[in-house]
Length: 61
Image (cartoon, rainbow, N blue to C red; front, side, top):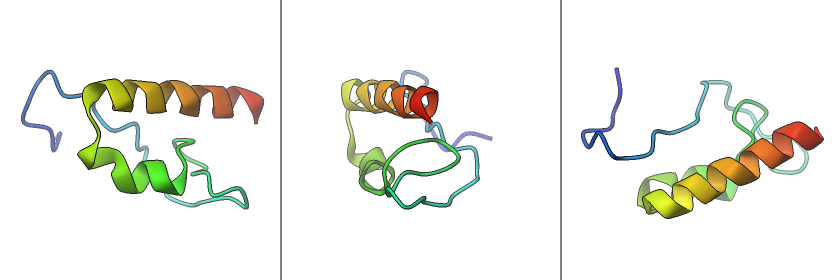
């Protein structure tokens, strides 16, 4: 079940493995702690940019 009411809203990439590593990056979704905290206040454009950054972190890790 999604918490998103708007079908155009970018969904959270959270995979319910919420633990930050020594670099303050979630080991589940690869967002920083700051990005996780700010997620619900971000625009869709910001969310998409955050997802791209998280993908880059994942591929580097």
